[in-house]
Length: 107
Image 1: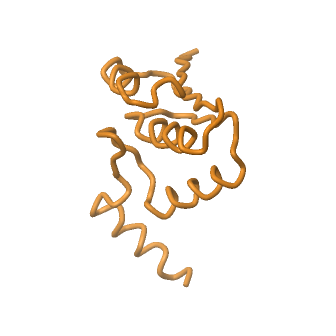
Image 2: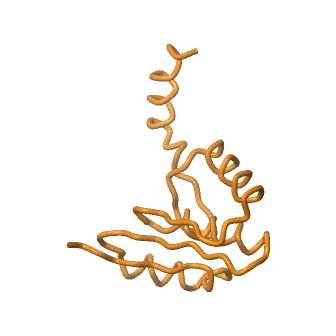
């Protein structure tokens, strides 16, 4: 099985399989990782999810929508060295934006 991993990784990269979208924002997770995170969030019901490295913000939106679905007052905290303004605007314009907080720290 492990011999297939380098081939699978190469093909995933070549076909941009890891670039998926949530509410119009790109994020870089395989669908399998997204399902695994959904299962973890459903079972644990966290109050806080911390994402280091925001990129386009799709993961923040995805996690915030999952938190909204399970109820409660949880939120997603995204931390990055450079949050592009247009990505910040897009994340804040989604229906679950109240569950998204961001910190930019470029020390």
